[in-house]
Length: 422
Ligand code: ADP
Ligand code: ASP
Ligand code: MG
Image 1 (tube, rainbow, N blue to C red):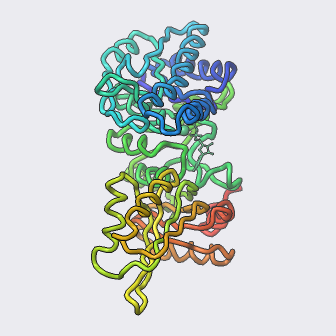
Image 2 (cartoon, rainbow, N blue to C red):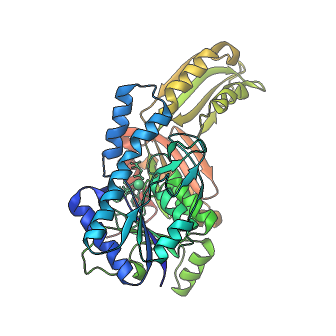
Image 3 (cartoon, protein in one colour):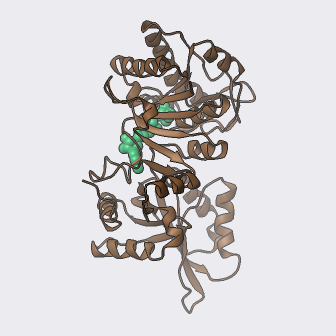
């Protein structure tokens, strides 16, 4: 017998028939002798709909009230799934974020989980009751409803799994695992049997939304075994325990698995695209100590995350251009902040471009192999794709390109790194 947390995303919960199917998948796990807790998302599209209502009410809405509104989508699906399970003859009940509670900080709309009181939950699971928990929602220290940021149900599931010391956290979604790139963009993407926490963390943070970034860092920190698999399966499909999806594993575990299979590690694990960044250039800044600090200090103080930065070589006049990227959602604030400081920073013009995309290749194999970036630059150049900025980390290379070339770039790189499947 194992203790398993199962999470179902929005597409899996979209409507009566789909929830009924989810109930059957859950029932099967319990019938196999496991203790089960389920974490659910709102129905697909529901959170977007609720966010729009908030924007219409007041573009500068109060984030605490936003949380009250957007957390409601998960309340609906958790109650419905409990009903469907009961209709199948299972003992089941819902546990809302405030009832457990899922304690978070008070950063409304992007709260962090600080702890989950799991005593009542574990007792109910041990008594054979299926716990149904709405993802995405929590409770602030002031006793108000919070939400965890978009895609946050993944993080709820991992946090519940850590709290109840689950043997595994199964993330059921609308694809049957983690692929070398988004299978909806590249038909030749290949499913990965195993991905390391570190690689998944990088992939998620550069745009692979199959898992929320925080869920991966939490799983890594707490040592939660996470599996990604499809909820769109027939009743006679193999059980989740036979590992049909993608398992997120530690570096050592992956090395052991591949050694056993006498397999060489792939140089590149995956490719991701992110259209949610914007590029800003400040021209003719004085090339002297302190100039760059005058730009990025105020942005940091305003909690704006700067990602890529390039500073051109100074021309003889002692002036230079500085280009950087910020999240698209923060572009307007960035422009306002820099406009206010035009004289202090001392730039000539500010140029902004929101039609850019960041393409990243990720793989731990990069640590021991040279030439990964060179392959990327050559493959893009051969297709006439211009690179506007570059950043690298130990296991990642990212480039900024024109947004219109996103799909082409991902496909070209997928082929260049020999990732194409059948
Ligand atoms: P859910 O509602 O179940 O949380 P999401 O839409 O958040 O589902 O995440 C699943 C989607 O992630 C897939 O439909 C797919 O388009 C996208 N995706 C992006 N990158 C990848 C990848 N490397 N592997 C698999 N899916 C990916
Ligand atoms: N419903 C929330 C969202 O759409 C959380 C989630 O689905 O993970 O962002
Ligand atoms: Mg998701």
